[in-house]
Length: 479
Image (tube, rainbow, N blue to C red; front, side):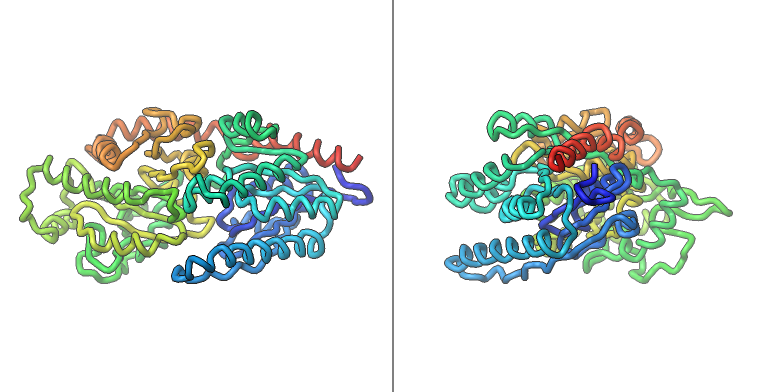
């Protein structure tokens, strides 16, 4: 397993991105250290904190590269190709510096793709220089992401695809995330890849009532304060809640934590706020839910929001609950959608946007009632890891339908699929009718998600499908 002249083998995990926002590569690092007993170097950008399990592991060493500066959107179009070229060359040289000089020589490089340029070129050159093996973990195809902004017919996209295919074929081994991607790589790229499905690690679990209460106490200020306006979940007076025994969702009765019967339904969606996730669908579905509930309950349009909210705060329950959408993540379109949200003025739906720590995010998923996934794959061949994490916490999911998603979401067992905002609104009405105690359809999906939570974990999947490939590649390279 170890390379020549080394007492212990070594692997380098390469991510041309924020390591804190690259969970699969964090899990690879943990498995390489724990299950393959390797020393692990991670070369990536900083930004968000990785999970504490990664930070605290003595055999994992993180090397942070300098981020490329963000230029304003007002950059003249004629300059953009030159800026992109300079960016690629700078990243290439920085990667070579870290991979060839700054870190100890590894037995194997494990690189995330995409991005492909300049990552695959730099890692291949480094593997030649360090006499190391080279494995690509295919999460998606980089050229399809580039095509979202430039169009499929762009020459830049064609050149990018050639680079991705050419240097991808040079790898000593390949992993990928779906069977559909495995088939595409074999048939059209000449690459033999092993499927390593995303699975949740051990820290994604359903949350206990006590864990939920502690989390809601920590997040109480963020949950109660809307984006500049009052809404159905903000405090009645607009003042900060000082009662640590009570949250929007839970309260102490004697010495026990209980769930409030008139609590809002908590729906979580994680997004990168990029064009491949159409957030507009969720906003439109929220508006439809709000209007359809009002129509079902025969509410007059003149009914004041404040009157309704006062009744809710006093404990009155309705056939359909308030919905609180918590949207987690960072990305370029976040501010644009926050401004849209602030102008909605809905009676029964509220939104909060936030970024959670790697430790609190699984707790939020384990505390929620439903997950919503807006991921539309640029290639149609990858699966959203956020859904895997949701299932790991026993959280049922409504997801955008596309060709490959049924490898993950089993309709009417652990989740539902939708293709439009109207379909999503219909699903919200069906699932939350009678919430929290008489919503049988939601309970069926939750039971299915809980079955998924107990059936597969990352460590088991990695042991069965990745470990043998990685150790075989290392062994062949050291012969």
